[in-house]
View 1 (cartoon, helix red, strand yellow):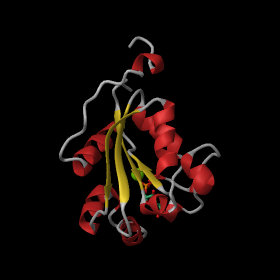
View 2 (cartoon, rainbow, N blue to C red; view 1 turned 30 degrees about the vertical axis):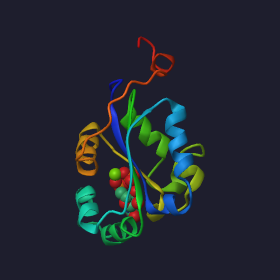
View 3 (cartoon, rainbow, N blue to C red; view 1 turned 90 degrees about the vertical axis):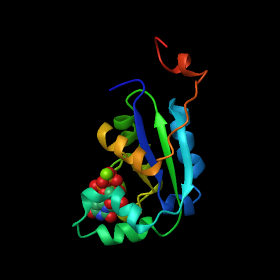
View 4 (cartoon, protein in one colour; view 1 turned 45 degrees about the vertical axis):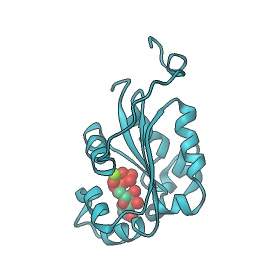
Length: 153
Ligand code: UDP
Ligand code: MG
């Protein structure tokens, strides 16, 4: 766990279609994380197959790629204390029905195949996903708010 940990968070096509972009971004901003990369992308199936390469062979894989390629996604990198694990807690469980109220999936979704958001599951996958979605790199900037969010900063 580090104060400068980075995680890849993505609003899936259903989150964009349902106008949840602002609400999801607001949760990360309000928690105290720093936005260091952001773009709207209509990804190709090939790109999405790379993103989800660990799941190749699963029965739901073709449907997952079709869903993810069905419209634009919002690709983001958020940085801050324990960003990977806490980001996953903020998202909720893979199955929205098993997600606590107060989590993004627990508040806005019902179906595992329409669970509106993605978050990296480890620091290693975050690094891989950030490189895949942002080959151009992220934006370095100093947050004036940081001393008010993090002790000893
Ligand atoms: N998924 C699905 N059916 C399943 C399991 C997963 O459609 O039985 C989809 C779901 O959208 C999930 C994504 O595949 O978010 C990636 O699966 P993973 O196990 O990595 O879950 P996540 O890390 O997104 O919680
Ligand atoms: Mg995953």
